Length: 185
Image (cartoon, rainbow, N blue to C red):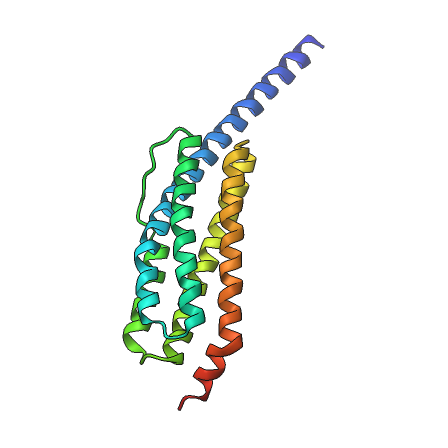
């Protein structure tokens, strides 16, 4: 009987150690993803003005200008999350976002101004939004799992902004831009 209790005790210790290792591994993944999105958001503060410059739809320009300001606030929120986990904010190049920005730049270089270019900008911007939605959703879940409630709240706020930006782009596209682009020959 005593042997069995000893066995159960060591099983519990092993489970605790495994949980601690998983938690620290998850924290490392959380930090890595945070560094990626920090780079991505900072890169977007440079990419969105190029989209604004190339857009012709007043509604699209207004939406992009609004989202540029949101993006600057999102950079600040990511910095706050770094503070919460007691890490210095660090940006590590996000290859996925770099590729999405490069694609957006290529679209703008290749298109003529007008509705076709606006449709291309919306397409590129929505790809960016979908990447951000996936990333912020994952980061929020990691934060919750790690017991970082305040970080989770900050990440949730950004997630909701990204979803709203995606919805706004869809509305601009369906209300006017795509119809106008389709009528061009």
